[in-house]
Image 1 (cartoon, rainbow, N blue to C red):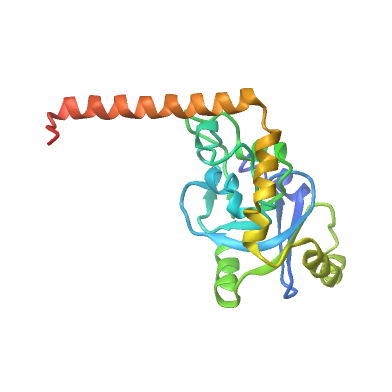
Image 2 (cartoon, rainbow, N blue to C red):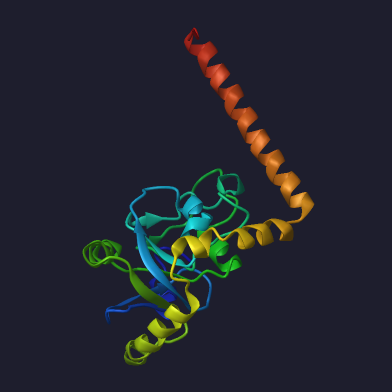
Length: 221
């Protein structure tokens, strides 16, 4: 989505409803679906791809406090795992990627992994709320455009969250059966490719460090 295309943003409405009754209005920046989860925040200026692919964020709607997100796009070498785990993504501004390493835009990545995202809201105000009140249950709505109806369904959303979410965060993310199932469903070729990619990146980093050391006349003890 073009950053300056205000008409396209207006036509793709999105809402973030919190369990305390607060509703933020923005525009859709990801998959065209709804999602609920635990709203948390991350203050990192970079690393959104690592956050999205980190299993520890499973079941959560992650808020990025840094306002400009998407500049570096997506690169498979920066993935923390084989897929994205977050239930939703909350940002202030979705930018068009401008990095030579970009293989895919953030919006395309979110759409492909069926992760809804909302942009155009005051993420720092939301972060202040979370800091003062603690984590809140939240619901990202792309399909329900009526604000009053969205607020009215909050009790139902909260009840659904309690039924669907395990009480322990560790139980959700680190359950050994889930980890084993993830490994079993991965293709052998995908595992081989992942190992080869990691080895290639590591080799290039070592070579680069060696060249930098030679150029500066650095003597290792």
